Image (tube, rainbow, N blue to C red):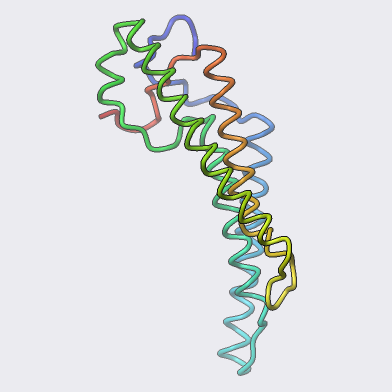
Length: 176
């Protein structure tokens, strides 16, 4: 956020994506492309030839889970997660109250990420001892992106907390 702009003003929309955002976009596009191709080929084989690729559904499910959590992690620094800005918008002109609210929100985000990471890690540990039915990949690969996403968002929120970065109320959409 620039020094000339108040926290309630939207961020410039013409900001170039950083390397993390580019990597996330490439990974999500790759997941989506492979999913679309696998499902399309499976549908053509099932309806055209009476057979299909058994692994298609399992692969699509795994890639979808990874795509969702990569997108969630990439959306955080861009400020694209759902935000209820009514109270924060009212406090934007009161610097101390706004700073305290920003810190409280970041602490809540970190706490939620810690709980998600803890639960996801428990599922990763459980999944290490089993394999998927068709592709035989370790079942730990399904909850792993939730763990990685929670850690990534938690670290980003912690850095913003330490830097005392004020909330950016301009989410590129309507502010309540």
